[in-house]
Structure formats: C-alpha cells, structure tokens
Image (cartoon, rainbow, N blue to C red; front, side, top):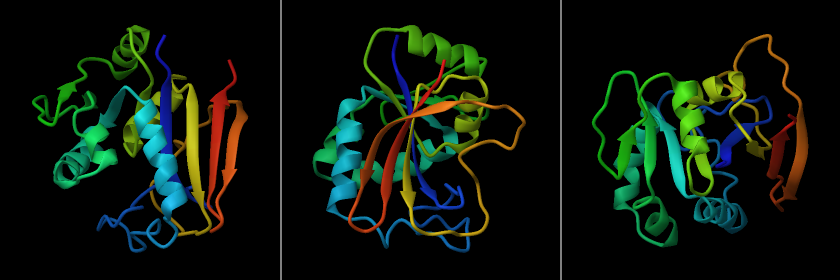
Length: 186
C-alpha cells in the first residue's frame, strides 16, 4: 500500500492560501519572509522521497506553468516525476501528468493500492478537503509559519467530522517556523 502524504504551508490561524505570491489573497506571499536554506532543504528532501504527485487542477496549472522553467536538484525531481491530477473540467494534461478519473475517493484508493512509493500532495485545497473527509491521508505535514493572515482557504474542511492524529516528527527552524508531521490514528 502506497502512503499518501499531504504537505502544506500554513499560518498560525490555519490558512494555506497564497503562500507564494498568488494574487488571490490580500496578504499573499507570506512564506517568502520566512523561507531559508533549512526549509528549502526540508522541502527538497520531502520531494526526493516521493514517487509521484497528486494535485488538484488549480495547483497543477500553477506548478506546470512555473516548474519547467526552474533548474537545479528540486526541478530535476519535480519535472519528470509522475503526476496524477484531479479535475472535473480538464482531462488532458502535459508535464508528465495524467487525469485521475471517476470518483475521487475510489480513484485515490486504487492509486494507493498500487505498487510504488509515497504519493505527495501539495496545495490543492479542494482535493485535500476531500482526502481528509474520506480518511485517505496517511500523513499530514504542516510547515507552520509564525504569521496570521485572518482569512483564506484552510487546510481542514469546515465540517463536523472528528479525526484523531498522532504527532510524528517535529522540527523547529531558527526563524520560528515549525515542521510538524501527524499520522492519522486508525
């Protein structure tokens, strides 16, 4: 069984929206002030350990526009890595990506049951909400930034479902950023 890992940048008040400069939020780019070599190495190691990406369409389009222009070890892994994209409106993808068809929960369950290494999800708020609601996330990695932005898309869906998580790894970076890993209690 393949492990599904959701990895998100998140503010103290739980917002995951616009960490890198997207024009959708009044406080866009909140990660930039805190990113340093330690966090970049953490994210590189995370990607190097993954075998494929699972993305929602919006995140896929953002990544597919940017990543092919980058160079270096991170790009060398990201660009050829297989990508599975969940989309109700688009079915043809480039950048080494395939459309994950049908019911999302069933398709992801089948993907996880296949051979291979870890599947990494980044961004993709709508997809992450669906994965969390259906109990498909094996590990949740939150890079917690010491900033609050008030409102925006949040990691967890607004529902009444209770999930119990156990703390795995925790890393404290010199600039106040925390990397926290949680495992779904089954």
